[in-house]
Image (tube, rainbow, N blue to C red):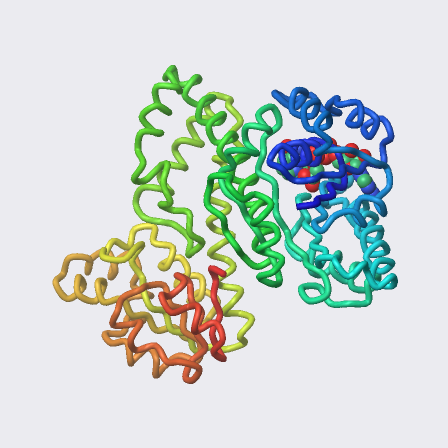
Length: 446
Ligand SMILES: NC(=O)c1ccc[n+]([C@@H]2O[C@H](COP(=O)([O-])OP(=O)(O)OC[C@H]3O[C@@H](n4cnc5c(N)ncnc54)[C@H](O)[C@@H]3O)[C@@H](O)[C@H]2O)c1
């Protein structure tokens, strides 16, 4: 394919050289003439493992050349990769100035080419954004710029895709040829095909997703990577203060691929609770503080959990309804344990705010019947004990708005569709995708 790469920084330079080495015909563009000259001399404008040899080779064979002229590059290609920088503004917001400028330039060239009527052989241009940008940037900011200039529709008259880059500086050439995944966010299948064809033959799973999802994936990745490093360093610092070898701890931690290095606990849902996580986080943070070790990440896990619980309270408040139902009370399915249950906290908050509440949890009702949890409920939560309903229907008949905090099949099968009480889904119900379009459904975990 004929490919133009706009921006010859780390991402653009590596993409241009690697695509050229895969057999594509690549023209790189940068506003910085020094970078253009370096590439045309067969030298890399960035310091990276293997990039020097690769650029020398592809420039020598003619597969890669560079120019300062966006028009020349876009005119001579069917796919345009946008790799300009998106740095932080002083207030932390994302700077989209370079993206907007380069998108205007591409738009003008495409408009000119349309005006010329093409040479009859022109393939539809696909504009592929590789720069990291917040969800909504492509569709709400950049596509309107292109459509305004071109006078056509994205996904019809020209292709648009978001194809985030997952390379790491230092090993970027290796990462390009062995990517952890390829993510293609597009409006239309033809654009997706054009992007997929660029990387044909590379390993790793290819994910075709909506444009904003592709934008968000890059943030999910980088936020998690930062969080992992911060977590490891904080834990290491606490271990050191307590005289424990943190690497030995992490060796065993990492060996657990059931609960630790696994998908466990990584799906948005409701707040956590129970008799262990809150207690153990509290005492770990306390031990760190006693040892004068600052652990801001660990210290903010419980506040983050409370903020999430508060979102559910706010969803109820926004409905303006007063009669509330709650399905689920124990801290997780399959148990009657109410200690530090986030649903108990939610119920207590709503009760404290004067909501007229009815609660049903089959496990809690049963254990109360058997006397197992009776004492705990009746001495610690007497105000909630009075609110417990024995049946699902009793709650549904009472409530104007129902919070669903359980996936108990008896509850799921009784929940109405688009009629009856409003539903606030705290657990992403199995049929949430369908319910999402029904009136009166709201999800906490979208
Ligand atoms: N560096 C990384 O490891 C990495 C990894 C993944 C994603 N990203 C993302 O990719 C994007 C690019 O990152 P980078 O590190 O390559 O940035 P960079 O600052 O190294 O390079 C950007 C290049 O774009 C050029 N440029 C700016 N405006 C231009 C225009 N109108 N026309 C042509 N060239 C123009 C600049 O001169 C510069 O050379 C960013 O959004 C970044 O967040 C970076």
